[in-house]
Image (cartoon, rainbow, N blue to C red):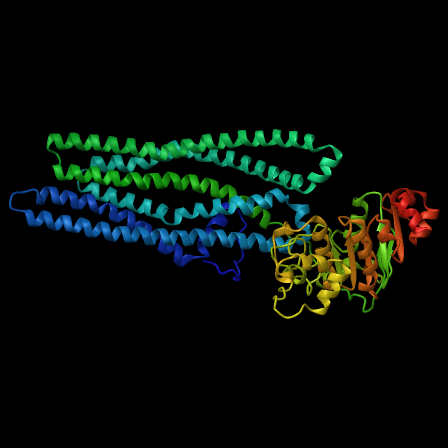
Amino acid sequence: MIDAYEDPGTPDTRGGWSYLWWLVRRQPGRSLAGALLGSSWLTLMAGTPYMMARAVDDGLVPGHMAVLAGWTAAIFVLGAFNAWLSIMRHRTMTRVRMDAYFRTIKAVVGHSVRLGAGLPRRAGAGEVVTIGVSDVHTIAQALTVVGPGVGAVVVYAVVAGLLLTVSPLLTAVVLLGVPVVALVAGPLARRLQGRETEYREGQGVLTARIGDLAGGLRVLNGLGGKGLFADSFRKDSQHLRAQGYRVGAVASWVQALGVGLPTVFLAVVTWIAARMAARGDITVGQLVSVYGYVAVLVSPVAFLLDMGYQLSRGVVAARRVVRLLRLEPEPDTGTEQAPNEPSVLHDPESGVRVRPGRLAALVGAGPAETTAVIDRLGRYTRSDATWGGVRLDAVPLPEVRTRILVADNDADLFAGSLTDVITGGADAPGRGAGNCATSPHPPAPAAQPSAAPPDARITAALHAAAATDIVQALPAGLDSPVDAQARNLSGGQRQRIRLVRALLADPEILLAVEPTSALDAHTESLVAERLRDARDGRTTLVTTTSPLLLARVDEVIYLVDGKVAATGTHEELLEYAPGYRALVARDTEEEVVR
């Protein structure tokens, strides 16, 4: 199987069929072995009826007990050898499927990392989740065609040849069986593809809804919209369930035909052979062999039908993967030299100027306004933003990501030790402090936890983010395991861990989105007090409406309708900007500030 660190190769994205064929070609030796083992296994099944026919015709004769014993022993040996072949075939095909499974996952994950922050804007979260959860499994199952699928075709030809030695009529009936099966099952397979495509699309949309619901449940509940959203979700899920029933109806017909048609086929051929034996056209042994041959064909015909079923589903899943892999990252055409010294970061669209070496705050009536500015200043959307007079999009992207860090307040946290979580992006700043899920460039390898005292930088970052208590509360301190998305921590703890990660990255310019929004007043006051010292001499811009944080920054930039309306200190804007005062001031806090 593909190694965890092996390059999966360049996928063939011309279409679903091309992608499936690419997966086969990436493991030619194993695919060939699967085809040979599958063909040998099914072909040798046809050897048993032949030996039984010889045992009946040659062994069931007075004085020929040795012949009967010989053929019996041969049948036993053949069965034992074929059982071993079946085990090897199954092992090989399992490896074929698992290689396709993990190769597809690596290709999708790698491409998602290359797309970076542009992925959420170009593909729904539900679509990506559906690909990772179900489509890769469906694609892997479709590669069954490599083993039993090829073997079914081979054994069909072999049995037809064996029957030709018995009766041309029986051979003709057998050869006509597959076209009849194809004519009956073909339209159903095409219909299944259409139904499956509709279902997968709906499944992706509903999965995205589930993610939105899980992420905003608290907000919905506070606004009284939980019931409305639940009703909408229930309606959509019922519609998807109805689609699933339609897919299941077609699939059940395909699978029923896989069992029913071979049985009818067996009955027809057996009836013809029995009439021929009654007339003396064939011997009793040949009648037994014909029955055995056709019984052997039941499995290959069922495999052929299942192959069509799995391929229909596999192509639908592969098309979804191909659609994602066809998305291209934003082109990086930057060739200009970045400023050699700390310089002003300017967004002409809003008028925001971030002066070097200062701690500034960006305040807007809605988070969408401030986030849009951060995205432009961090070069996550196309804009005319400049850095020291140089257009930001003219600077090579790797240099921008190295020196400018956008730290989201909901950036992903991957599973691992607490040390891994907070140091994983320290050497590779990017959106979300080096977070692979939102950064176009993967982070440097995480530092390995050790028994030595924590690094002074880690201790300082934990102190600045008021997160020392988190480490002290965990059973193994920095070596304690953290669940995916840090679900074993509270919302405030997760936010402080994200801030620790951003401070450890120590970028030249830090653009932090609502870094204290989930903290209680006491903890937020500690963070606000310590952030200035932690970022002394560095450029820092935070988006916030918290008076506790605003009172401690060098400059506040107040936005109205996405444009700079006023700048100054927190105290100055409270006095001279009524809109700002109405947005951020609370009576008790306002008194303290004044």
